[in-house]
Length: 238
Image (cartoon, rainbow, N blue to C red; front, side, top):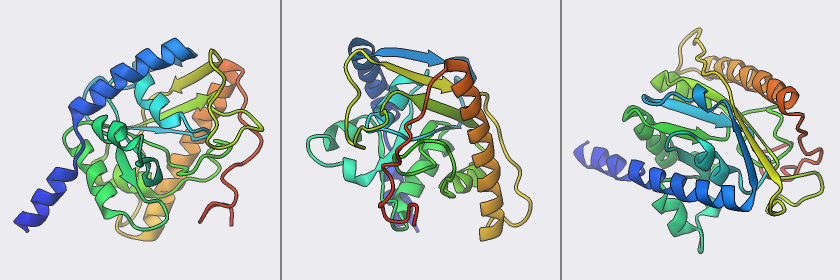
Protein backbone atom coordinates (compact mmCIF):
# COMPACT_ATOMS: atom_id res chain seq x y z
CA UNK A 1 0.00 0.00 0.00
CA UNK A 2 2.83 2.39 0.80
CA UNK A 3 4.44 1.91 -2.61
CA UNK A 4 1.14 2.52 -4.36
CA UNK A 5 0.51 5.74 -2.42
CA UNK A 6 3.99 7.02 -3.28
CA UNK A 7 3.43 6.26 -6.94
CA UNK A 8 0.17 8.19 -6.88
CA UNK A 9 1.84 11.16 -5.19
CA UNK A 10 4.44 11.33 -7.94
CA UNK A 11 1.75 11.63 -10.59
CA UNK A 12 0.20 14.74 -9.07
CA UNK A 13 1.26 17.65 -11.33
CA UNK A 14 3.05 20.70 -10.06
CA UNK A 15 1.05 23.72 -8.92
CA UNK A 16 4.10 25.90 -9.59
CA UNK A 17 4.31 24.56 -13.14
CA UNK A 18 0.67 25.50 -13.72
CA UNK A 19 1.35 29.02 -12.46
CA UNK A 20 4.37 29.43 -14.75
CA UNK A 21 2.45 28.06 -17.72
CA UNK A 22 -0.41 30.45 -17.05
CA UNK A 23 1.88 33.47 -16.98
CA UNK A 24 3.57 32.52 -20.25
CA UNK A 25 0.25 31.66 -21.88
CA UNK A 26 -1.38 34.96 -20.93
CA UNK A 27 1.54 36.87 -22.44
CA UNK A 28 1.39 34.87 -25.68
CA UNK A 29 -2.38 34.99 -26.14
CA UNK A 30 -2.63 38.69 -25.46
CA UNK A 31 0.20 39.31 -27.91
CA UNK A 32 -1.08 37.11 -30.72
CA UNK A 33 -4.86 37.42 -30.38
CA UNK A 34 -7.56 39.76 -29.15
CA UNK A 35 -8.47 38.02 -25.91
CA UNK A 36 -11.68 38.84 -24.05
CA UNK A 37 -12.19 37.14 -20.68
CA UNK A 38 -15.57 37.57 -18.97
CA UNK A 39 -16.61 36.46 -15.49
CA UNK A 40 -13.20 35.84 -13.93
CA UNK A 41 -14.70 36.78 -10.57
CA UNK A 42 -16.74 33.56 -10.64
CA UNK A 43 -13.62 31.40 -10.27
CA UNK A 44 -12.91 30.96 -6.53
CA UNK A 45 -9.53 32.40 -5.56
CA UNK A 46 -8.77 29.44 -3.31
CA UNK A 47 -10.01 25.95 -2.53
CA UNK A 48 -10.74 23.02 -4.79
CA UNK A 49 -12.62 23.77 -7.98
CA UNK A 50 -13.32 22.17 -11.37
CA UNK A 51 -13.32 24.54 -14.34
CA UNK A 52 -15.31 22.78 -17.06
CA UNK A 53 -15.26 24.11 -20.62
CA UNK A 54 -16.67 23.26 -24.00
CA UNK A 55 -14.17 22.01 -26.58
CA UNK A 56 -13.95 23.23 -30.17
CA UNK A 57 -10.34 23.82 -31.18
CA UNK A 58 -6.69 22.88 -30.82
CA UNK A 59 -5.82 25.88 -28.63
CA UNK A 60 -8.57 25.26 -26.07
CA UNK A 61 -6.37 23.71 -23.38
CA UNK A 62 -3.74 26.43 -23.55
CA UNK A 63 -6.41 29.12 -23.69
CA UNK A 64 -8.24 27.72 -20.67
CA UNK A 65 -5.24 27.71 -18.33
CA UNK A 66 -4.03 31.06 -19.70
CA UNK A 67 -7.37 32.85 -19.25
CA UNK A 68 -8.19 31.50 -15.79
CA UNK A 69 -7.57 33.92 -12.90
CA UNK A 70 -5.70 31.22 -10.94
CA UNK A 71 -3.35 28.40 -12.00
CA UNK A 72 -5.11 25.40 -13.53
CA UNK A 73 -3.93 21.84 -14.02
CA UNK A 74 -5.78 20.94 -17.22
CA UNK A 75 -6.64 17.40 -18.31
CA UNK A 76 -5.63 16.99 -21.96
CA UNK A 77 -5.63 14.06 -24.35
CA UNK A 78 -2.45 12.01 -24.19
CA UNK A 79 -1.72 12.28 -27.92
CA UNK A 80 -0.77 15.93 -27.38
CA UNK A 81 2.07 14.91 -25.06
CA UNK A 82 4.47 14.23 -27.92
CA UNK A 83 7.52 16.21 -29.06
CA UNK A 84 7.75 19.17 -29.31
CA UNK A 85 4.86 19.80 -26.88
CA UNK A 86 5.51 17.09 -24.27
CA UNK A 87 8.03 19.00 -22.14
CA UNK A 88 5.96 22.16 -22.28
CA UNK A 89 2.76 20.38 -21.24
CA UNK A 90 4.36 18.38 -18.45
CA UNK A 91 6.32 21.41 -17.27
CA UNK A 92 3.16 23.51 -17.06
CA UNK A 93 1.48 20.89 -14.90
CA UNK A 94 -0.99 19.49 -17.41
CA UNK A 95 -2.46 15.99 -17.05
CA UNK A 96 -2.40 13.48 -19.95
CA UNK A 97 -5.45 11.26 -20.29
CA UNK A 98 -6.27 8.36 -22.58
CA UNK A 99 -9.94 8.88 -23.41
CA UNK A 100 -10.55 5.61 -25.21
CA UNK A 101 -9.56 3.33 -22.33
CA UNK A 102 -9.79 3.44 -18.53
CA UNK A 103 -6.98 5.73 -17.35
CA UNK A 104 -6.49 5.27 -13.61
CA UNK A 105 -3.33 7.38 -13.55
CA UNK A 106 -5.13 10.41 -15.01
CA UNK A 107 -8.02 10.04 -12.56
CA UNK A 108 -5.67 9.80 -9.59
CA UNK A 109 -3.73 12.85 -10.80
CA UNK A 110 -6.94 14.85 -11.14
CA UNK A 111 -8.15 13.76 -7.71
CA UNK A 112 -4.74 14.66 -6.26
CA UNK A 113 -5.03 18.22 -7.60
CA UNK A 114 -8.47 18.65 -6.05
CA UNK A 115 -7.53 17.01 -2.76
CA UNK A 116 -4.73 19.55 -2.30
CA UNK A 117 -7.35 22.28 -2.87
CA UNK A 118 -6.11 23.01 -6.37
CA UNK A 119 -7.98 24.06 -9.52
CA UNK A 120 -8.59 21.46 -12.23
CA UNK A 121 -9.45 22.27 -15.83
CA UNK A 122 -11.44 19.69 -17.78
CA UNK A 123 -13.23 19.29 -21.11
CA UNK A 124 -16.22 17.04 -20.33
CA UNK A 125 -16.99 16.55 -24.04
CA UNK A 126 -13.53 14.92 -24.36
CA UNK A 127 -13.14 15.58 -28.11
CA UNK A 128 -13.07 18.78 -30.15
CA UNK A 129 -16.37 19.27 -31.93
CA UNK A 130 -19.12 21.86 -32.14
CA UNK A 131 -18.75 22.54 -28.41
CA UNK A 132 -22.46 22.58 -27.60
CA UNK A 133 -22.40 20.30 -24.54
CA UNK A 134 -24.88 17.97 -26.24
CA UNK A 135 -23.11 15.10 -24.48
CA UNK A 136 -20.49 14.84 -21.77
CA UNK A 137 -18.53 11.95 -20.35
CA UNK A 138 -19.04 10.85 -16.77
CA UNK A 139 -15.50 11.60 -15.61
CA UNK A 140 -16.54 15.03 -14.38
CA UNK A 141 -19.39 13.49 -12.38
CA UNK A 142 -16.98 11.02 -10.79
CA UNK A 143 -14.52 13.74 -9.79
CA UNK A 144 -17.33 15.91 -8.45
CA UNK A 145 -18.87 13.07 -6.48
CA UNK A 146 -15.55 12.18 -4.86
CA UNK A 147 -14.45 15.71 -3.92
CA UNK A 148 -17.59 17.89 -3.92
CA UNK A 149 -15.49 20.49 -5.72
CA UNK A 150 -17.69 23.26 -7.15
CA UNK A 151 -17.86 23.34 -10.94
CA UNK A 152 -17.32 26.60 -12.83
CA UNK A 153 -19.12 26.36 -16.21
CA UNK A 154 -16.99 27.84 -18.98
CA UNK A 155 -17.63 28.68 -22.62
CA UNK A 156 -14.91 29.41 -25.15
CA UNK A 157 -15.35 30.85 -28.64
CA UNK A 158 -13.03 31.64 -31.53
CA UNK A 159 -10.47 28.83 -31.38
CA UNK A 160 -12.10 27.12 -34.36
CA UNK A 161 -14.53 28.42 -36.97
CA UNK A 162 -16.70 26.43 -39.34
CA UNK A 163 -14.55 24.87 -42.05
CA UNK A 164 -11.33 24.79 -40.03
CA UNK A 165 -9.66 21.46 -39.28
CA UNK A 166 -9.52 20.22 -35.71
CA UNK A 167 -5.77 20.96 -35.53
CA UNK A 168 -5.91 24.35 -37.27
CA UNK A 169 -5.07 27.56 -35.46
CA UNK A 170 -7.23 30.70 -35.59
CA UNK A 171 -5.87 33.64 -37.57
CA UNK A 172 -3.55 35.97 -35.72
CA UNK A 173 -5.28 38.93 -34.07
CA UNK A 174 -8.67 37.22 -34.31
CA UNK A 175 -10.87 37.43 -31.24
CA UNK A 176 -10.91 34.67 -28.64
CA UNK A 177 -13.54 34.78 -25.90
CA UNK A 178 -13.71 32.95 -22.57
CA UNK A 179 -16.80 33.25 -20.37
CA UNK A 180 -16.71 31.88 -16.82
CA UNK A 181 -20.02 31.30 -15.04
CA UNK A 182 -21.13 31.02 -11.44
CA UNK A 183 -19.92 27.83 -9.71
CA UNK A 184 -22.44 25.12 -8.93
CA UNK A 185 -22.70 21.71 -7.29
CA UNK A 186 -25.12 18.86 -7.95
CA UNK A 187 -26.54 16.36 -5.51
CA UNK A 188 -26.19 12.60 -5.82
CA UNK A 189 -29.45 10.69 -5.40
CA UNK A 190 -28.44 7.14 -4.64
CA UNK A 191 -25.22 5.21 -4.29
CA UNK A 192 -22.44 7.17 -6.01
CA UNK A 193 -20.67 3.91 -6.78
CA UNK A 194 -23.44 2.85 -9.17
CA UNK A 195 -23.44 3.65 -12.87
CA UNK A 196 -27.02 4.95 -12.79
CA UNK A 197 -26.33 7.51 -10.06
CA UNK A 198 -23.20 8.70 -11.81
CA UNK A 199 -25.11 8.99 -15.10
CA UNK A 200 -27.83 11.07 -13.42
CA UNK A 201 -25.20 13.37 -11.91
CA UNK A 202 -23.53 13.66 -15.30
CA UNK A 203 -26.79 14.70 -16.96
CA UNK A 204 -27.44 17.33 -14.28
CA UNK A 205 -23.95 18.72 -14.83
CA UNK A 206 -24.37 18.64 -18.61
CA UNK A 207 -27.58 20.64 -18.40
CA UNK A 208 -26.01 23.34 -16.24
CA UNK A 209 -23.04 23.58 -18.61
CA UNK A 210 -25.40 23.85 -21.59
CA UNK A 211 -27.43 26.55 -19.85
CA UNK A 212 -24.27 28.58 -19.26
CA UNK A 213 -23.25 28.13 -22.89
CA UNK A 214 -26.61 29.48 -24.05
CA UNK A 215 -26.18 32.51 -21.79
CA UNK A 216 -22.61 33.06 -23.04
CA UNK A 217 -23.71 32.91 -26.68
CA UNK A 218 -26.39 35.52 -26.04
CA UNK A 219 -24.04 37.69 -23.98
CA UNK A 220 -21.21 37.79 -26.53
CA UNK A 221 -23.07 37.34 -29.82
CA UNK A 222 -20.64 34.53 -30.65
CA UNK A 223 -21.29 31.48 -32.77
CA UNK A 224 -20.18 27.88 -32.48
CA UNK A 225 -18.75 26.04 -35.48
CA UNK A 226 -21.43 24.09 -37.33
CA UNK A 227 -19.23 21.22 -38.52
CA UNK A 228 -18.45 18.46 -36.03
CA UNK A 229 -14.79 17.49 -36.40
CA UNK A 230 -15.23 14.84 -33.71
CA UNK A 231 -17.28 12.62 -36.02
CA UNK A 232 -15.28 9.51 -36.74
CA UNK A 233 -13.36 9.58 -33.46
CA UNK A 234 -13.58 6.40 -31.40
CA UNK A 235 -16.53 6.38 -29.08
CA UNK A 236 -17.93 9.64 -30.44
CA UNK A 237 -21.09 9.94 -32.52
CA UNK A 238 -21.21 6.22 -33.31
